[in-house]
Length: 101
Image 1 (cartoon, rainbow, N blue to C red):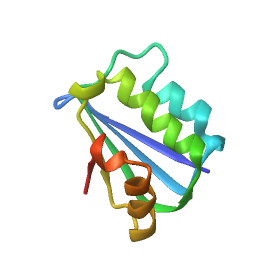
Image 2 (spheres, rainbow, N blue to C red):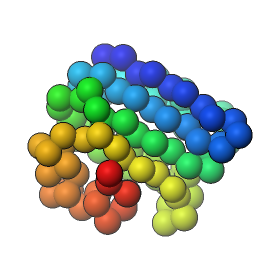
Image 3 (cartoon, rainbow, N blue to C red):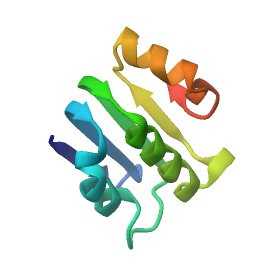
């Protein structure tokens, strides 16, 4: 599992692009990229364009990011998710917590 992280310092936007599977195998990378010592960015983009599957730990990581980024004030967009992943996110109620594109 690979995690590509890009930070647009002008917009203070952190983009996380996952490949293949979004699961516990990226926990350390995910934590270091956006939760650790780093102050919250103004906005986040979670790119699931290459993700074929995600598990409950991925959902947990998204919730941790939301909390870290300010809860209801957080600007987190989930983009390029397949129909199946969008369905999973909707069933879990994540369409009410995050912006899905």
